Length: 148
Image (cartoon, rainbow, N blue to C red):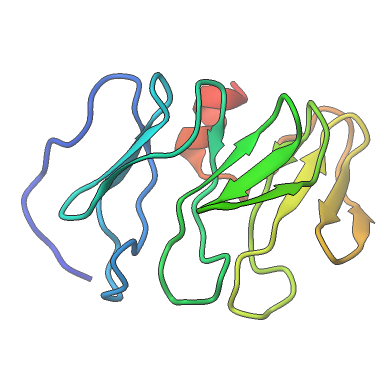
């Protein structure tokens, strides 16, 4: 782990989305700006990816040991991962990406608060939770903004 001084990066309303975007085995400071759908990575590229209302869901979806820029569009239940699109989920679902299949790749998954069921793309569904629960795998900053 690298230690260093405090760094000001981003503006009010930005959502922190740290990850290893450059593939050097260290997380970069990064933010997603919901107002314009832009990703800002310190020392990396600035990328416009997403639109207002999208939820950032960064992860290693391709198994490259790098964090991929990705968003979940709750209005349509569509996932957009750096050029790929996958419809998985419905309006009201909460994105819960993670390595559920133990493949070292991030799996597309949703939690349906209305039923307490978890759905993993290409996998199975699991009843675990109750109506109104909010899953923990979602980073705190994203939960606070989108699911207060």
